[in-house]
Length: 128
Image (cartoon, rainbow, N blue to C red):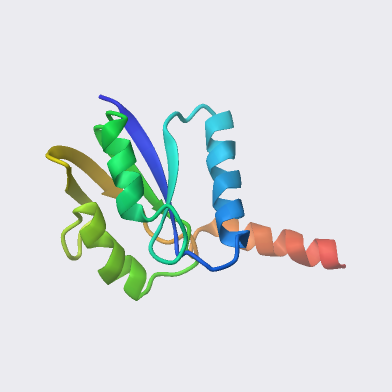
C-alpha cells in the first residue's frame, strides 16, 4: 500500500501561505515521510482536487490529510471533507479519483495541540 500525506491550506493571493506549506512538506520529507503533497481549498494552486488527481496518478492508495489551519470552521467541516470523500461528522472516507478509490484519513485543525502553546511560550521568550 502506497501512502501519501496531503497538507491542506486555505489559499491566498500572496505566496506566504504556500511558502510555509512547502516548507513543512520539505521538513516532513526530511523526517522520512515520502509522497508529501500540498493542496489549497481556494485561490492558490494547486487546489485540493488537482493534488488528489496527482496523488492518484502517482499510485497513492492511502492519504493522511492534514489541514494546516489554526482552528476548525466552515472550510474544515463543510467545504473540504466532500472534496476528500469524507462523510459528514467523520474523519475517515474514500476519495474516488478518476475511477481509483483512495482511503483518506482526515486530521483536525492544529489549534488545540499543546505544542502550539509551547510555540507561544517561545515567542514570548523571544520577545523578552
